[in-house]
Image 1: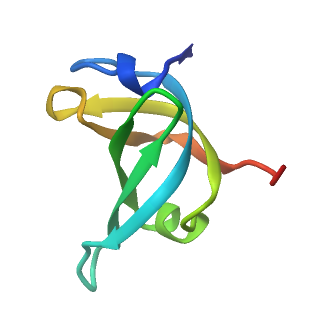
Image 2 (image 1 turned 120 degrees about the vertical axis):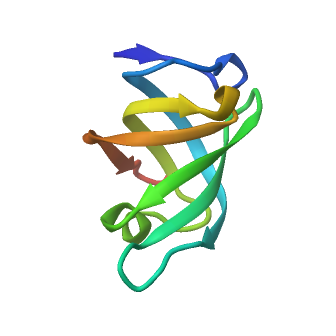
Length: 93
């Protein structure tokens, strides 16, 4: 797994580890599929983050997170976490 800063994201990257803070969350799902688009920022930039199903409930605005198994979409401007990946909320402090 490769640790990467948000400013260094580009199309075609996969199996990434990304750290950042959730700055907003917008629900975008249906009754059959829960989906949200969050904004994730680090000290270098920000990016859209797709959250699906249980991932939607794992985070809230202000949480610092570590994404494991992340990959880029749409020219590196959107980040998603694979089914085998993980969204981990880091302890405060």
